[in-house]
Image 1 (tube, rainbow, N blue to C red):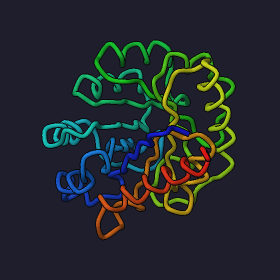
Image 2: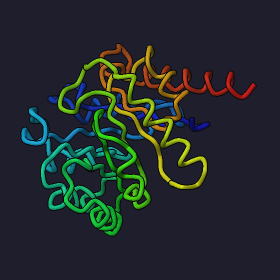
Image 3: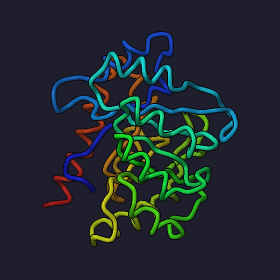
Length: 231
């Protein structure tokens, strides 16, 4: 578990008609609001849902200085992901299940100016991709099946988080461990205990009356857990 947790609100749960305002609503006070803004790009092919794409990301980049964490749930990311990096996204995450050459893709993303993230579905084993992950900056462990917001947290994936955390702590990997799916006040502590650094939260933030306060509350939970663990 990171001593300084990263909280990445997912705009999948935001009001799409007011995205600029919704992104601004999670900024909060310096050091307490959102660290990243998580943007779920879905193409209705790799996953059954269709959300938003590059034009919306470009529009958001023009109105916020918060780093955009673009999670591409799309077919053929080898072709399309680079555009998101070149647009100015901070981190561009692709699915290992969809990438043809994930090692080359990571190199191309970094060359285009972004961090490179690799996402794995709940049933995808981590072990097969440990060598691939040496080329990545972020590992996104999906704790729901990708494609829809508001799903129930799948606790079994925390075994993958623990393995990744051990690999990072022993120096075999150098990346941020991120989790996405069903993260809220009831699940964030078990994710933190397993070794997550960055927590993607959608409805837990955007269903709240004050999204920035919800972000701060999630951060405080992880910080309090870290304090207890260190004692």
